Structures are given as structure tokens and as C-alpha cells.
Image (tube, rainbow, N blue to C red; front, side, top):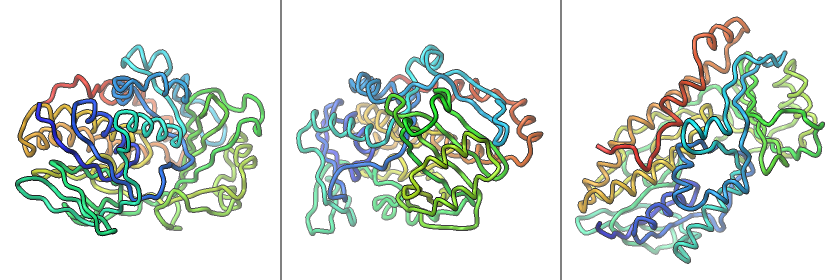
Length: 394
């Protein structure tokens, strides 16, 4: 295998996971991050078996088990009565079927684990305060330029810089996001402030007219993560850190189940975040001869299938394998891209479709829709069963 110097723009979850995969494969990796310090927002994240294979291969299994929660099941309920419409098992069943567990984590905890692993593999791998502005690609390599006037050179550049990717913008132009009509509320509540056993330790989805709510536990059950999706014409900034009035949150969920009311009433009224959701068509070409994209920069997805970070982790593992298949950078990046485009586009489109499923406007519609589908069997068949370490590459 040809050892390469690889530049990664972006030290988020996808960039760090890719860095670990590439170092493990023998490459020289440098990660550049525009922020002044490392960190993530206070929100939950879900990691299914398809990404867990990669994390275990990196030796992170014990860390993930330590900081995560394994939910017992995925449960769909009516928004007002709480009646269970469908459930499929997770925990032991998910691992038995797919070969690795399903785990729910605090994003900041997960980011810290990945960052620590990357630094253990290569000291000083992440360079902070490095805002990329452009890159120059030639036959000998690629140069990444920064706002402070400095630059970095390597054999390959990976744009892992998210929905506002500088690398994508230069490669493919603006992403042209389209407002979905939905906004997402985000709350994280200490469970010692909630009534005991308010919710069982499962992934709970309350579905109703014009919105849905997702609840699950974090940090060994010490925190409850709440994500509430509502249909609204009130378009705001696409930011996870934008606060909105608690009274607006309360009004959005008037008439919903008492469990939802209890969670909202317990929330810190000064810590209610809501961001507008925008749809982006997945790119169908995201590589040049020496530059490629990864994660949200090329296949940003709506949060209706819990696969955004998972796809980015898959990307890093497949990229490392592709680079091992050819000494020619352009050919290796083409192998990576063609083995990821179809799957990631399917995930993005299925996530968008779930928005309709979760927001049906009558009980009859919800019952009819779920009577036609076994959500667990469908996901196990094509989504969770994928193993980035062993799937044949073409």
C-alpha cells in the first residue's frame, strides 16, 4: 500500500473518525479545524451496528459502552394517547442480527472519545484556528489555504467540513438548501428532575399531526434527550445553538401526551433550542483527482433515520479501504465514491420519506401506514446490516 499524506478539513465526528481509520491504515494524517477549541453541542446521537463495526475495529468498543446507553427497543406511539403502534427490538436483538450493538450517546462525549483516540494515534493531529478558504490541486498534490495566510500540502484533501463545506463549495458550487417546512426543538434534561420511570429505556417516537417527538436516554440514564419536530412557516437560522422561547415550545405541543407535557414543563426555560431544517440533494459526484468529500459535506441528511454521523463513520472506513486498493489517487477516490453514492443517497431519501410517515394527520393514516410495513425488519435488511469493513467494493 502506498503511504499518503492526507489533509482533513474539519474536526467533527466524521473528520475524526476518518482520521483514525486512515492512521490505522498507515497514512500520515493532519486535521484542520476552524474553531478555537474542540467541542460539540449538548445533544444526543445514535450509533447503530453499521458504524459500531468501525468503532470496535478502532478499539473504541469499551469507551462507547462506558459512555452510552443501549435502548431496549424502538417504539412508535400516537402523539396524544401514547398508544403503541409498532415496536422492534434493539439491545441484544440488534447485536445478534447485525453483529454489533445499537448505542445512544451524548454528542460531546462521543466527540471527546474520538478526539482522544486520534491524538493517541498521532500527537498534535488537530490544528485549531485554521479556517480553510480554498485549495489548489495539481499533478503532484493538493495545497489547502487558510484565512491566516498559511497553507498545508498533501497528497489528498478530504472535505469533512459539514453543510457549509468550503471544499464542497469550490468543487461543486453552492448546495442550495431548501426549507423543509419543519423546525427541530432540542432539550437535554437531567432525569433526577423528572418523575421516576417516566419513560422506559427505549427509543420513543410520538407521532402526530404536523410533527413528532423523539426521546431517549443518555449517560447511563442520567439525561433524557428530547427532539421535537414541528411543521412551521417560521423559518429561522440553520443553527443548533439558536434559542427560542419556552412558551413557543409549550404551545407547539398543546394536546400531546402527558409524558410530553411533563418533559416540556421540566425543561430549563432558558435552554430551549430550535433550528430550521433544510433539505439538500445528495451529490452524485464528490471527488476530483486528489480531493474528496465525506459526511454532511456531500450527503447531509434530515434527522428522521438517525444516520447522519453513522454515514460519515462508514465513509471513513470505506475511504481507507479504497486507498489500499490503488496507488493512483484518482482511481482510489473513484472507488470510494462509487461504493458510497448509492447507499448514502438511499439513506438521505429514506430519511426524507420518514418525515411524511411520522407526521400523518390522523390515527387512521398512521395505523394504515404501519400495518403495511415492519420498520425493524426493513431497517435490518438493508440499513443496519451493512458492515463497512467487509462489504465487497467494486
